[in-house]
Length: 363
Ligand code: GLY
Image (tube, rainbow, N blue to C red; front, side):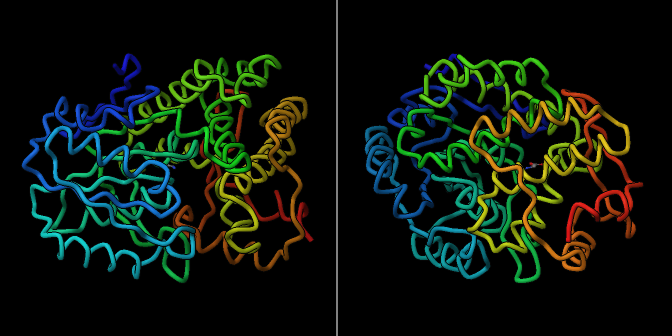
C-alpha cells in the first residue's frame, strides 16, 4: 500500500504524507508501520458529520491492531475554531488520561486539523499527532506543514504554534461524500500551487479532459493533483518551516482572501472561494504594475472560473479593507506584504505595494 508518499524533510521532525485510496480502513496497520506502539492511547478529534461517515472504520482498523482509541466530537465551523473548543479537547484529554506518550488524531477538514494540532502542541507541553484530512483543501494545504491554531475574536489564527504531525494519511475516497462546493473550494488551493510554482500542474488543470476527470473524482487524476500540490508544499515548508521568508508565497491570494472572509462574514465565502477572489485581485495588481501580462491574469481567472469558483470582487468599504490589511499577520514593520505573480509558475514577495496600487478596485 501507499505507493504515493511524499517526504516532508525537516531536521529531526521529518514525516511522510501518504496518498492512497483505502487508507482509512488501514490506519491501524499504518500506525504500526510508523512505529507507533499499540500501548499508546489515541484520542481522535472530529466533528459529528465526519465521524458518522468515517469514525467507525477508523476505530475498527485501530482495534484490529489492538490500539485503544476514543473519538471526541467538536462543533463544526469557523465559529468554533476558538479557545472554548480547545478547552473542551483539554477536558476530554484529561478525562481519558492522555499522557506524554499518547497520540491525537485529527480526522476532518482544516478546522479540525488546526485545532487538534494546537491541542496536541500544548497538551502536556506537546504530544504527537496524526493528520487524516477528509476535505480537498485540508489534504493539499492545512494538514501539511505544521501550522496549528485557533482564532482570536480580533483575528483569524492569531493563537497558534508550529507543530508538525508524525504523518499525514490522505484517502481520496473520502472526497466522494464531500459537498461539491467544498470540493471546488479545495481546487482553489491547487490552482494556487500552479500559479506559485508549478506551471505543469497549471497546464494539467487547464486541459478540458482533465477538468472533467477531476470534477468526476477520477482517482488517478485526483491523486496526481493532490500529490503535485503536496510536493510543492513540502518543498516550501522544508526550505522555511517557520515562515521567515519563502513560505509566505503559500499565502498567494490570502491577504485579500482574509479581508473578504472577515468583512463578508465567515461562511458566506468558503476559504477557497475567498482566496479565489484574492488571487484575482493579486493578479490584477500584478498586471496593473507590469509584473505579468493582462493575458496571464485572464488565463488565471479563466481557470478559477472553470472550476466553479468566484472572481467577482464583492462590494467592500475601502476603510474597512485597509483596517484589516494593516492588522494582518502579514504586515511587517507596518508595511503590507503581498505575494504577486511574475508569470504562471512564479511569484515573488513584495513589501512595497501601496494602497493606491489596489484601492480603486473597491468602493
Ligand atoms: N497555508 C499556508 C501555509 O501552510 O504556510
